[in-house]
Image 1: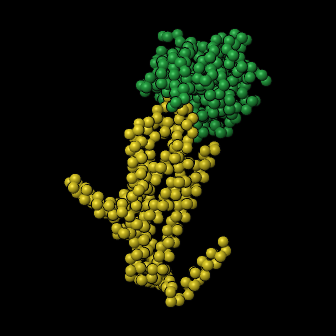
Image 2: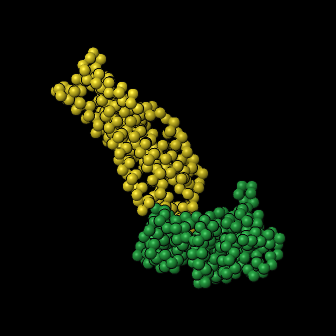
Length: 246
Length: 252
């Protein structure tokens, strides 16, 4: 078994003529928490979306838990079954109750019985601290609750890696901490996480590795201590001073 | 608003007096002959309804079958969808009806098959196929209106493309598809009148036949128009009821 959960070697991607990812090298060890930050349009979301093939990379190698991600449908399915994802816009299924949102994947993709899937769903709703919302529709929940349901929905697939694409950016300020608390809990339990976020307080607390991206490149990466105290590059220094100013 | 109402009233009142131009007696249910004529006309109703329902059901099924390849990642499948829609949509209903009724049996015969196509089935096939190009486009726009994030979320929890469509996209799209589909159904009911030209005994055919014997086109065709109006109003009410039921589900 490989030690790294995710390996990206020389990954490049273009949207038509636009070079969005330039030679991305990133290794995420098992149990490691990586926080990616950078200005908007820097390619940080695209990196995360390449890992489970929501975007196709054109050059380079991506391996998840030793499986190489290729155009082969089987490799894509194998990797998606190990990787959960939490989106900025939650993307809950609005026509299904919270419980049905959580059981759909386990029942249809994993072949669990409804009973087992519901047991599992309730267990993870407990974990994100909203067991009482199981029978509501997503539209009846606050943004923070919806995002926690979305996290529980990913957890129900029992992934080895969780990707977060700006999970708190669409939330009202008073709801951000309830989502971050859940994420910190997951981190403490040893989940491998790749998080795109601007929440630097969260990053300082949980990150093992910080990554700063700009214009499609990884400009700087390293452990959070030196990263925050003494960023090496001018661009990173400038970015951090801007988002930490207030 | 008031002027047309007054005019309409005058028209009806004027019609009731037996002047030289109006002769409501032909469809006056109080007289024996009038009652026979009215029954003759309304007897076409069942055929019109059967024809429309069957054509609409087939059109909805075929439309979905045609719409799905339009979402394929493979270009060949998308071309199949485009060619079907563009081609079928371009054929006027009446020529297509003639082609199906008079032409299609010849094709079957040349293949050694004996498939008789009577007026009813000729009309059903024509209406269904002609309409399916439009229902297919309705499905397409309804499905495309569901945000991309829904598909992505479904993919990340391991659903296949077919499962994503079945459990995530279609249940949401159906609410946006239903109102324009209802429009199409109304359109089918009205277009079913064309079946009269190949001899199917539906509402319009019956009216035509009665006009030939009674020579009272104005009165008979007026009643015919009201027969279609009643049908369409009933459909509209049904659709509104259905929409309300589905709408309340969604909010939940």
